[in-house]
Amino acid sequence: MQEAIRETAQSRLNEITAQMSAAAKLATRVPADITLIAVSKTRSIGEIEPLIRAGHQSYGENRIQEAQTKWPELKKLDAGIVLHLIGQLQSNKAAEAVSMFDVIHSLDRLSLATALGKAMRDQGRFLPCFIQVNIGAEPQKGGCAIEALPELLAATKAENIPVAGLMCLPPADIEPAPYFALLAELSARYGLDGLSMGMSGDYQTAIMLGATHIRVGSALFGERG
Image 1 (tube, rainbow, N blue to C red):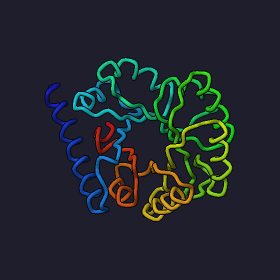
Image 2 (cartoon, rainbow, N blue to C red):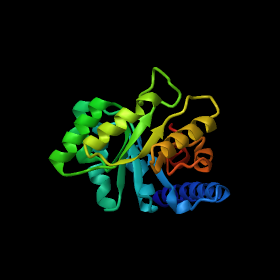
Image 3 (cartoon, one colour):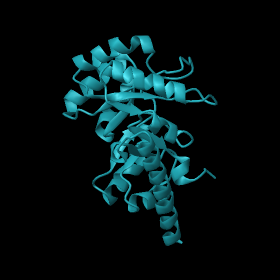
Image 4 (cartoon, rainbow, N blue to C red):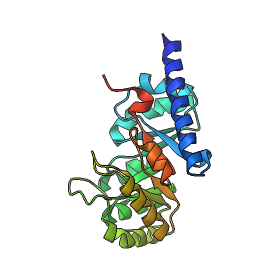
């Protein structure tokens, strides 16, 4: 049974990495420049472990508390695991996030920049952060407004926060390509390298438009029961 589960994890990982490589080559990009983040939120230790044993090292969680219940144990399986915080972050949880995670994808406001800057200085851990942009100007979503980007970038510089790039979640049920293209244009405008965009249903499109980090859950772990 365990062997079958491990083979399934390896098979899914192989399929996605092959599709990533194909999309990268079409865009005349180097596949190794793209990081596959396995979105492990709500997944159990038993679901995640086979993927770790298959050799995958980058994982994404939405909630600090959930990550704290799983990853201290799971990280013992592979010292090279990189844990990404991909969910919204409250300023009062900044210190916990800095101690628990290796990369933050949801820096989206001045108050959070201040809190993260202090936590990083206090802990001596200067984590790379993506600035989340509300690319579709949706009031129900987190993310920095496009017009507020210069001020937030200035704040991160003042706080000595390493900015890895920009992140977005395009509007649901709409063709994502124009939003990915806009994020890429903004990234180039501000001299940033990283683009965290693309999920299970659209990661190939995101890669074609410059994604450096894609966030894939169901395509790796299967649909939730």
